[in-house]
Image (cartoon, rainbow, N blue to C red):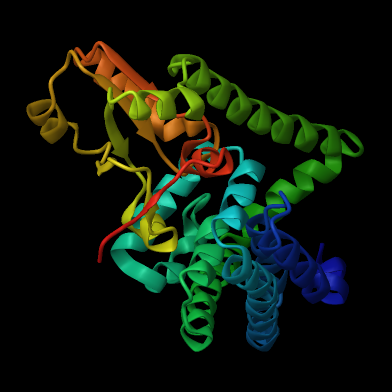
Length: 313
């Protein structure tokens, strides 16, 4: 390991971190730990190389993140939805990012890399929210530095344990690659199974945009909930006529305000309407007789040619 770290450590870190920041499913934290452990084998000379690896890691993160920052600035919500579809936790990453960004603003980038799924969407969201480039570089660079320092620091602190693990793997020979592949496949399979279980537990029924438009035209308007987070409503300041804002995390107020025998339609800005389906299931459990997510959300509504209203203020 020592020879590999000495000759290719900086290049490996740059390539791995850049690939991760561009959205490829290649975890970089294990690489940082291995490189940190390799450098710790020569404690008298490790500090300058560690600083070099840290700088390279931050540079790679900023290069990859800048691509998504400008993609978010140009394409807005479409970029974030595309990224969520690449994630094994796409059902939660967009909603979680909405909440974090709505509360902390661009400062969330300083901790985003430590929270799975958050960094994937928060960077293009910052671009879509027209964050200033100096602010983006400052907070994203800080987050990249903290994240890389943790990885390298873990490698330095646990260098002996890392060496033991590598020795064990080397004794396995070609079987080591098989063990790693099995562990990785098991992890991906578990995430996939968890996602399938979630989708199976949600309401499968949907209301189509044309059906909702027919109800509005006939004067039989349902209660229409827009459950997009404030950050996304800032990005897309339009609603379906008659919609009211609601937070699926505050069901108590909804239960106390609206009759449970009326029709309710819910829409969100998430892939597969998962947040809307989750809220529909909770309302059904609370006794609402007729509640459905809008298939495709407000994007499908607009694509069908139906009108929207600009949010006042």
